Length: 281
Image (cartoon, rainbow, N blue to C red; front, side):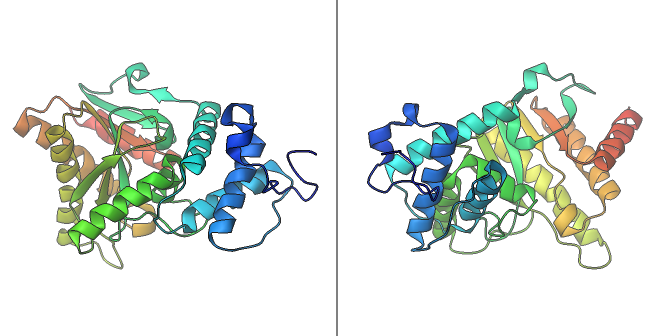
């Protein structure tokens, strides 16, 4: 009997352990993970035949999964699968980047593929990641490709804390299946209408909190996303100005030697950062 039935579902009589991770190809791993996550929810669904739709379904199931323990078998398959996906996307090492200024880098790309000591996640106040299936925010991407362990660790932090995460502070977790070592989670200010001085103060606090936490834990490099832009509606130009100024002032005042990467994804943000970094002599 084939390891996969004609409906495209994993044969429940055959576990990942009996196949062994090494003997499962990417599609088999992906289908195993989908079936496991559907079974957790007592849900029935046909697994699509095409790779793109399978990947979207798997990501959606990762996104909506509540923080909970997972079997060792599931984690082994998940970790192998995410490692393969990362290899296919390609890893960028900070050692291969050229600084635009001493210890300051500008890099356009997918932050989940950057190998450095820490990356910054633009989190929300619940600190559990984005639960919206296949959402394009960085919080969603980081939790998806780190694996389900990240949401579980965040949930433990929040349970101990006993309250929502305040805007402008930061928390550190492991990075699990990401190529970096740690993820620093910070909640940026949300700009509903007019930008205020308080919004700016809180955004500055996000950068300071992350830098201080990184230094406290001995990180030698840290990549910042464009905190609070996008879904939180902070104007891109002003956000970049605050980011660059705050990092430079922190390094000057503390003597920190941490290498800082300003990570951007959109061309608009790259142009803003390139211009501002070139103007800040």
